[in-house]
Picture (tube, rainbow, N blue to C red):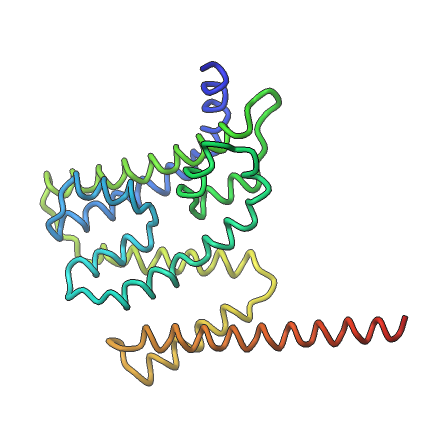
Length: 241
């Protein structure tokens, strides 16, 4: 028990910035859910089980319009596909985590990945429990913020006009962060270009799926050319040697 308390104490300071962000984003999400008729229980349950902010904001649209399973599947995959790459880069860190591993994988989000990937526990603190409490605290902040937002939405009547812009703002912030953290901006340029062209060609009501398909094809072709160039460069270097 003592080692868990020490791990919790060591993990908490790392999660304070996430606490601030998740609380306000969660409150906005909870208020939007309440405005669509979903109370505290449903909002908290969805945040607890799904736990992916961007997809949950998208899910509000899925829940309140005619359900299109293909559209929902493709959108969710596109929005959350980055988690697959996060998971691959953490395979070594998650080795030996035993029974904690399923939850560590489930609870992985952008913020948790950043902390777990860049932080090491103090000497004497169990690394597995340290990562577990970082994940659990961030998860808790999101669920609590969502529930608080749904509660406030049910108790106080106010205009939510413009509140759904939170999702757009979230994507913009994510895009800027990715742009700043990556040296290769070609994938981002491809994404913006394909989306803009699809919007012009198909209009705002039908551009999502064509944009996703064109992005996927473009990235696959670009990756093929990059691999071919790398292969030819390797052959050339071997010939010189």
